Length: 121
Image (cartoon, rainbow, N blue to C red):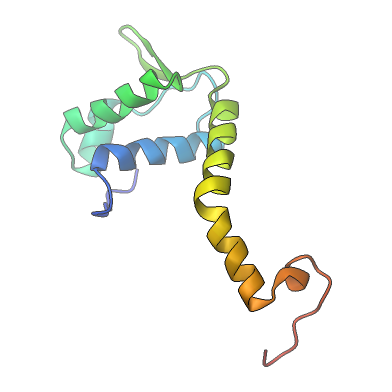
């Protein structure tokens, strides 16, 4: 995991988002083990409790499951659950602004392939 953090949200939330992205991108599939808390903490230069907090949040959302003595694993159906939630979040949080920009700039036809961009535009 990339150790570059931003100040917009707590690090444990950023770790959660990175794991979610790995699941959505197919890098972590159902039944796959998450990187160990210790490894993520070392690579990311954060406190292991920060990583644990992120993993516990994922477990509370039923996206991962703990197997005693083995670690955390991607839960069955996690990708489908995430796709549904992330799509809804995008449509509510981001799409209205993107749609307004498309309308404002008159890009609807260009994006739908109806008009070709001219050089110099």
